[in-house]
Image (cartoon, rainbow, N blue to C red; front, side):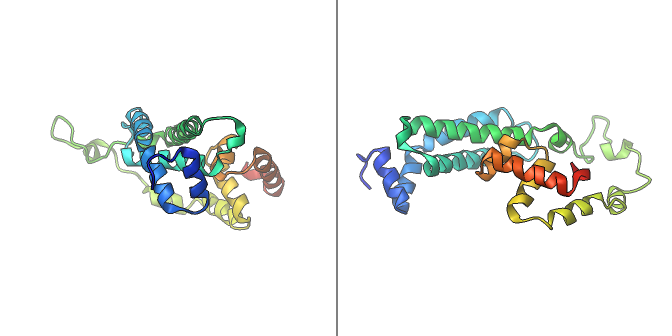
Length: 198
């Protein structure tokens, strides 16, 4: 691969299924991917179970979107489009992992965490009358949700899953790479089919 090749020449080769060109393009933009991944991770690293690698992977996914959807007729530099796609993808990921509904999981403290007096959290927390799994077994609402989802086509099932988990129409549109009109139409159809779930 020739170092003198510009982004647009490389993009042309990538769209011709040239894997070497794609690898070269990723290497060329690696410092950009690392920069934005580190910046996003720094603002979220207090969340349990989140690593830098998660953010780097999301940055790469944003870069992949840029490669797939860049249109040189839009009169915008590829570099500008890449940065925008990476930042958008990381922003979407940060919103996903910091949603309020996930707060208890993301910031959970282990009951086996030692306290200053030599005790553990599990020593001072009263035992449940019923274990959580027993409560879940007696609640068939989640199963009804899954049964309903299994009656849907693949795309509608994905839309339903994301909406049920709190994603906005625009976020669903970006994640599934479909128009907001399709998202809206699908959800309206689902509301008529099973209005009690929404």
